[in-house]
Length: 165
Ligand SMILES: [Zn+2]
Image (cartoon, rainbow, N blue to C red):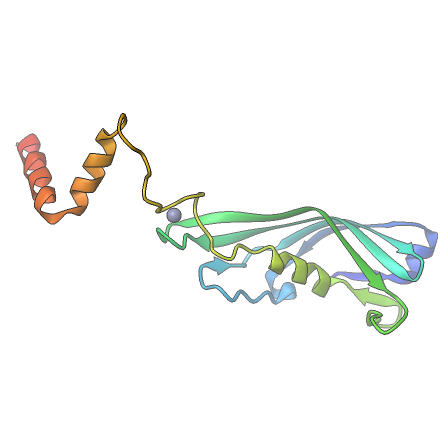
């Protein structure tokens, strides 16, 4: 169900809105092929009247299927907006569109969630960066280096063969 709020119900006080918007309802388009938004957007909100506005407050949450921009490993990224709020004017030039007495809140949730998408998704902070270790713990670094050099790598594969025999 798209998220419609009957604004007349706000006359009796704040209204709790809790549920999920499916990817189809969201029509979320990702501009980045590394980010796939194919899971529902969860919301847990309170709507209340604040003068000539509707004040929405609460949390938004959405899981994204991402691919790491550096190592291409798939991973899940959670977009979480725990203290989200949005003010929707009911009067003036910026006033929101109403369908009879209901406002479709979907676009507002969609926009802010979209803005929180990762721009450069990484499976972990610093993935693919050259290790900047100096001295001391140099041994693992050496082995990793060797495997990327063809000459050295053949030495290592020879050692592997020896181990297998
Ligand atoms: Zn990665």
